Image (tube, rainbow, N blue to C red; front, side):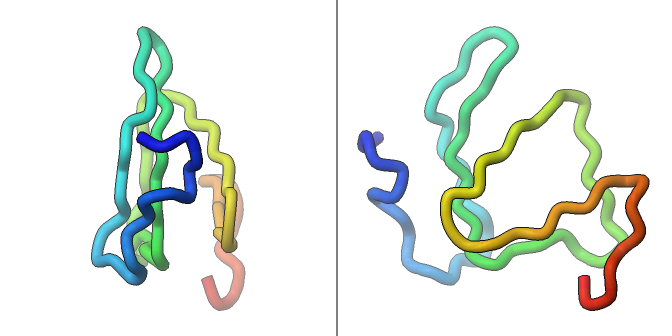
Length: 74
């Protein structure tokens, strides 16, 4: 792993997100996730047992919580 999170990026677009584990300790996992336009299918709800903290370093994203209505176009 390079010291720069932007090094070694795959050419876009990719069919799947790229997950790279950077660090793992009891109770915490840090990953670099490279997305090139992937999204959940309509009607799919992603639920996981643990908490997640996300930092978007480049581009844009839409995140919707369970108690929020979908916006037009999303």
